[in-house]
Amino acid sequence: MVVERFSVHRFDSAGRLQYELSARTMRHFPLDGRTDLDEPKLRFYGVDRTSHASATTGSVSTNGERVLLEGNVIVVREASAGKPQGEIRTEALTIWPDTEKVESAVPVSYREGTNTVTAATLSADNLRGNLQLGGGVKATFSR
Image (cartoon, rainbow, N blue to C red; front, top):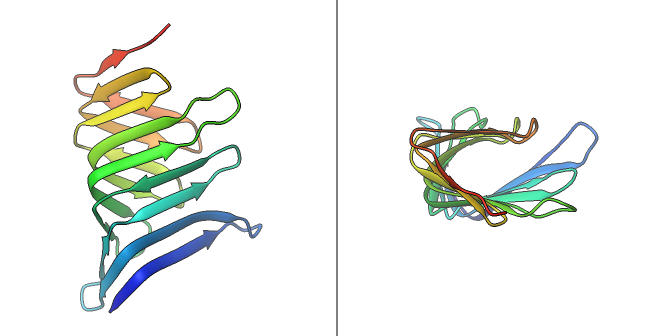
């Protein structure tokens, strides 16, 4: 099955929009359950600020709980009162949309305001506000 201009919306138990996954093209292969995406975009509608991710390609796990983004992955968490915009750049990122967790096993850069950090790996939990970087972490902080 091929869908052009694919879009799916997830709502929480109170009926509020939680996230939206879209792509220029979605290809689903029913024999093995594989779903591939061209130019995927994932947008989270948080309580205090919105985050959005994009990539060249992607795929969705057979149970739909995991999204893999690959190629020029950019994640932006918009600025809010007292918090600057945050941005992650990498070549591959796994996202669990329902739990708002992300992981990357390839080099990443993270920028928040004028502060920058590079690392070999990343693990983050947006709901808890945790960000873990590993492997040769280098940081530049502005005063």
